[in-house]
Image 1 (cartoon, rainbow, N blue to C red):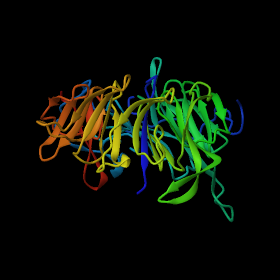
Image 2: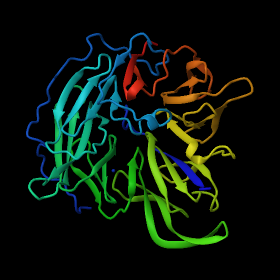
Image 3: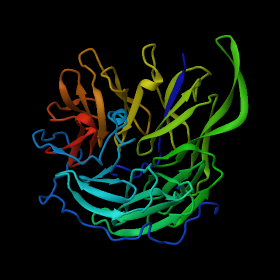
Image 4: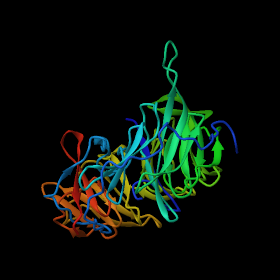
Length: 438
C-alpha cells in the first residue's frame, strides 16, 4: 500500500491574498503596453442598487433569495469542501466575483448575477487561464489577471505560447492600473500586497503589484508546480541523488526530493526540507497555508511513515502533527485556513472527523465528534467561523476557536463565503448565491 505524507504550511506573515482578500534573466518584462488592442473597460451593468450589508463573519443566509450565477463562475467538484478556493474559477471580494476567460476579465455582482464590468486581457489566449487575484494596496483594491498568449497557428506553423499578458484593474471600475507583456509564457500562481508571483517550467519571477515592475527573476529555481500563498513561494525540487530502500523485501532506487521556500521579497531561499520521496505536491488552501503530499515518505518521520504536518511557511519548521489511524489515509485529510487564526482539518467530503488548530502555536483547539456531539462535513472556514453540514441535520456554523455551535439554522452551508454572500454548489456544477443576513 502506498504511503502518503501530507504537510500543511502556514505563513508567518499572513497578508491578504486571493479571495479577500516575491536578478535579471530570461522572461524579462517588456514595456507597459496593452495586452490587447482595446484597453477601456465596458460597464455592462451596475452593482445591485441597495447597499450590501457586510457581516464579519456571516452566520445566517437567506435561503429563500437564491441567485444562480453565470457559468463562468464555477467550483469544481473536488474543490467543494475544505479546499474551498483552491480551484474555483473566480476570486470573491465584497460580493463581487472576478473571473477571466483569457480574452477578458469580468466582474460579476453575486446579488443579481449580472456583469458589472469587463476589461480586455488578450486577443489570443492559451486555453488554461489562471484565476484572477484580488490584492489590497494602500488606498485601493486591484484585480491582477494574467494569461499566456499564443503566436503562430496559421498555415503550417504550430501555435505556441510565447509570452504572458498581465493586467492590474481597479476592482470597482475595471479601469486599467498597469499592464505588462512578459516575453516568456508563465502562470500567475498568487499575489498579495508585496508581490505578484509567476512560474513556468521551473522558473519563478515576481512583479510589483502596484506598478507591474519586475521585482526579481529566478530562471534557475527548478521549482515544480510552485504555489504562492503569503510568506513564501513553496515548491518541489528533484535532486539527481538516488537512494536505495527495502520495500516488501525488494530494494529499489528513487530520487531525493525537497520542499523549498523562497522569499517573496527577493526570491532568495528561505528554507528547504528533504524528503526521501519521488513525489511531492503542494497546493494552497488559504493565505499562508499550503498542503503538501509526499508518497513513500514523511517530511519529519522515518521512511514509509504516513504523516500530516503543519509547518511554518517562513521557516519550514513543523507546527502541528495530525493523527492518523488504520482507516484514514493522509490523502483523506483536507485543511482550510479561516484567514484569521485557525486551521481546520477534516476528512474530506465526509462526516468522520474535524480538528482545529491555532495557526500561531499549533495547539489543538477542539475536535469532533465527541461523546455527546456529532461531527460535520466542513464546507468552508472564514474569519472565525466554520461552515458545514451535519449528516441528516442540515447546515450549521461553528465557532472556529471553540468548536461550539454558533448558528444552528444558517440557511445554507456555503462553499465560498465573504461578508456579504455565501455561494453554494448547485446541480450540474452551477453556483447559487445567498445573501448574508446576520
